[in-house]
Image 1: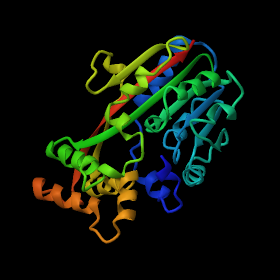
Image 2 (image 1 turned 45 degrees about the vertical axis):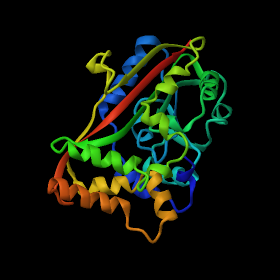
Image 3 (image 1 turned 60 degrees about the vertical axis):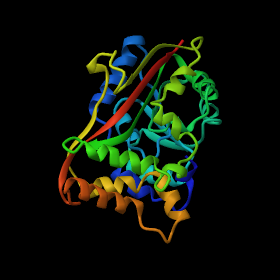
Amino acid sequence: MSTFSKGKFNASNYAKYRPVYPQSLYDTVIQYRNKHTTDPLKLIVDFGCGTGQATKELVKYGEKVVGVDPSEVMLNQAREEVPAKNVDFKQGNDKTLASLFAPSSVDLLTVAEAAHWFKYPEFWDQVAAMLKPGGLVAIWAYYTFSFVDYPVVGDIIMNYGEAENRCGPYWDPGHPILVEEYKPVVDSIPKDKFTNIYYHTNDNKQSRPEEHFELVKENVPVKAMIALLKTWSPYFNYMNANPDKPDIADLTMEEIHAKTGLNEDDLVTVKWNSITLLATRK
């Protein structure tokens, strides 16, 4: 996550090209919370808010929403992206989060595409301190994607993300947790402090379909997905470390064209693998 704090990181492109979460996700989170508490949603905290992709939607549900992120670069962009009157942004990390709020004051804590950067089980102590009894922590993420009509692209993107001559060695610590679909996060939950634990991945089909969101987007230009690859933290790290080498995202576009015939202006349907984890404070 430290990469996102670097001054040269392009937060504007991050905000522009990162996918927007579907309404079904927010419906799932709010409905799950309402099953376990009747308290009003007075305070929502969006931790690891980045440029505010989720914060922008959460302002519809809470009387007060606070986005928290370690990166001032990201927070400055978030303030531009989310000008709502009931939102505020604060700088903080997984060691200082609880100190930003009164004990047992938060009704809903969300963590979108960020939970793999935290230390466990220490993070749960922060969450337990700030959530009200019955309050909900909602964690979700997406990882590798594919083009629905071109399955080979999934393998190409996986190679881009993990190969030694691509992004593989340049991820910040925590990336393996995402690759493991947050299983280490689930296993670290202290059962004496949290209950009603719900965990769903694309491979874990035990939960009902209406309780899980799918991240699918139609009519996406291929070039927009290449731009998305350039928002990944290891891309930034690779290009800084190898300024004289070819752009690895552009090389990925060449490989996609060679294996599918797709050009950068062609439109495709994109599907991401996704993860949902919900738990309430005892």
